[in-house]
Length: 217
Image 1 (cartoon, one colour):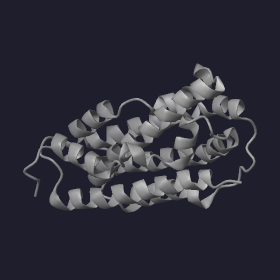
Image 2 (cartoon, helix red, strand yellow):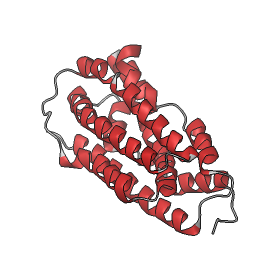
Image 3 (cartoon, one colour):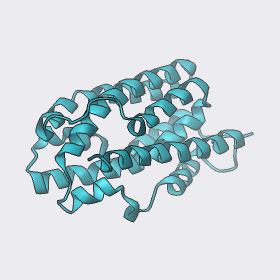
Image 4 (cartoon, helix red, strand yellow):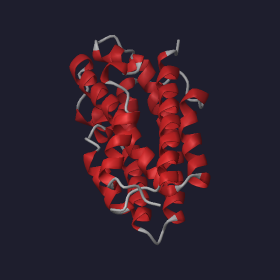
């Protein structure tokens, strides 16, 4: 049965629970914020993101088909369109960072899209939506920090920063759209429990993505 909390409160509480504190930024993001980041690591990031975005887009479209007759289906489809838009910004970032030392898929970087693909097949769509909203807040903050650092320390222009700028937008509009798609009744108890589980794993796999890049030789 639905929770006695509104969906807006549920999403806010989930975001607060799952978003790491600001001081817990990944090591790679902290390095760039202090001017010590290596562009070679971001070149590999761009190469890994080509695979990640293509996979995530398909996963989101599958989620959209699983609830095609509900507002949540359109929400997932909108996210898939956003992935397509983000993909178009990657070549400029890759060109500004220089050639990647490794374009092969790195297990630590590809764990996140692999789990999202699992969720697309097996997850509870309302819970997946709630978990994604919570995760996007942390991802957006990291992208905003990188965009600022690349402009300040490396002289990147708007086109070169467009990939990180795209994701750096506040997640409030996305969260509100998710709340409207999920409906005012709120998540059921099982959906809320699943959202916490999905969100914790998504956050862990994102952490693995960043640590993998930070550990590159």
